[in-house]
Length: 322
Image 1: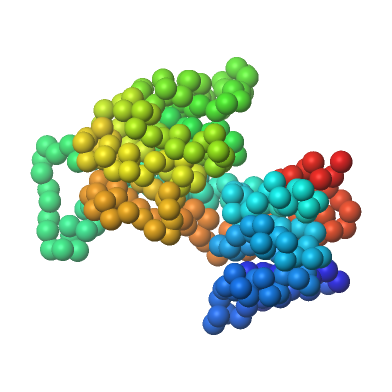
Image 2: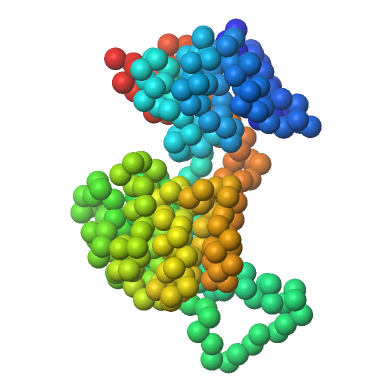
């Protein structure tokens, strides 16, 4: 039976599903997480590793003498040296399907929170204040405003569907444009990136992190965004240059921003935390128990398929199969 190293505690009922297929090495609930040194200690004797808020760099991969597969809790895989894993003929597995709706939900929750200023109102009431100005521009109505989605994969499409239900006009940008029939069916329209940024009342980011996307949102792109617009990021932190975002929030280029991911997470700059027009959550796009259980099952099903000689749909580096 193949051994799988779990880098963080996983509930017994999750592991029970795979007890006849896989043997797990897992920290107990009290310990919660294996350190990197502990990962290096355990990995020499396992066939696979499931990363939960951990990384698989060259050192970790080299230590895995029997390693055949690396899986990650999430659709992203920038925590894995995929190029080196591919060179070593090690499969990389992600969880692209089970994250979709939960991440899209948080995107809409953040959009509504920042546009309607609910976090600030919550803080005021808890501090004993009652800010009720008849004619205040601190909030923006969602209905009738435009949402620009950058990155139109599974999550981007799910966000579009929810935004349309709220009465928003949805535009999108993606390097791979849909055909006209699909755009009509989804009730969205395409704009080049700069036009989308300059025209939309709110922009929501949903692209993967790649070298090409590093600091996609920077001084230049922020400067062309519509005056008084909003930015939502539930994609990856480094697609936004944090220092440039802070300046845009302070100078009024942006009316607000809501972020679930950060350039240097878990570290968030003091300047960003001091921005009253920024709503911040700690990378919890998929943080519900059932979704995390589903993600574990999606990853393990991919691992079992690969170890069983099949081609899992969620293998990232398909080139190792040829």
